Length: 234
Image (cartoon, rainbow, N blue to C red; front, side, top):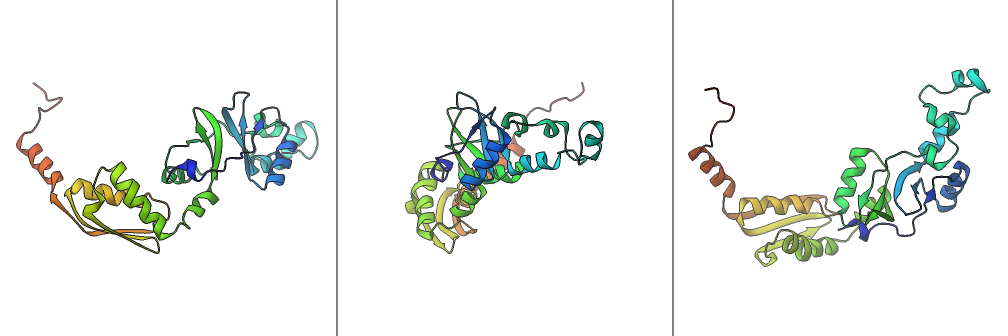
């Protein structure tokens, strides 16, 4: 499943010069927690999130001047103390994803970079946005939808393996694959790619067999014909 199939198309975005009040009003109006900041060409420069606005609110000094800075929260940097526009308050560069990438890649990126949403790009320009809520919604897919993606997309078009050689069942998101493939590598790829399908909660390939253990053959060939030692002293 690709990001473009899940993303929100009607994206709320602002320019660099938008005031933080305008950004906050837009978030409340649209019921969203973050807004991409774009330039005149539609390219994403950064993202203003609820956290950025909260930091700005927390950074307001008790009084002007030096004393105000002394009483400001210690965790807030100078940028948020002075920020008045989206361009000044945004987190940049933005963490983005391409529309053609998989939902699994989007989920992994959110976890690794600790973000709640990803602006979606096509041709370098903003075309949508995908959030953690969208990823969660993908896990409500039916067993039939999961089976369809595995049987008619992942296995034949991504792995170039005939699905007719396999018995695929999906029950409450639990995938079981049985049958026979040509190599051990193919069997391992089927398991790995199955895990990446949104809605899959477990994968069982214990009954998937292979005709040739290509990994063992490669290992045996390596030991039989070792390459030249590199960096050896003469």
